[in-house]
Length: 188
Image 1 (tube, one colour):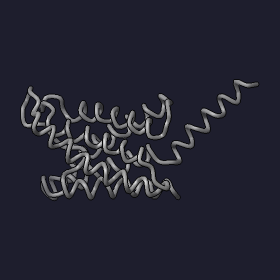
Image 2 (image 1 turned 90 degrees about the horizontal axis):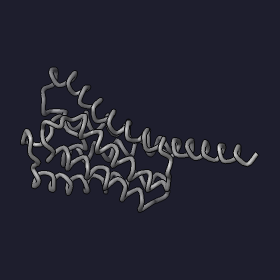
Image 3 (image 1 turned 90 degrees about the vertical axis):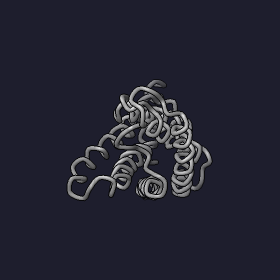
């Protein structure tokens, strides 16, 4: 039940933040083809930190409160926003999603006190798949409802579902049990 609450908190945080400021994830990147837009990246990081703090607060309430989760959510969403707003447009969404996914995964591994590379790899992929999948779904829906109408809602909901599932307490326990089982096997 905690995992479902965690996923719901992640989706609600991302969607509410995405509608209020803009989503963690974007259809396109910065306004310049080959250069960074540093002011936009800085503003994106600040907005991302606000969305991350809100999402992290919601997530932490589902597990009894954890400042490490809030810090990890701030890092995760701030990096994504900074890249979405300021990275060169030629990088493309997939590269920005991969870089921010790795940053998010490392931050959440730190929050979970995990050094399991499989967990980091899975979380990185989940962030990337959520962002890119959200853009793909938007591409299918937008011709019907119009671009700019549901962009942040769609991308943040898909990213929230994917990321929430990958970082849920149930998944952390699964990795923890596997680690315990393998260390138990080594004792024999």
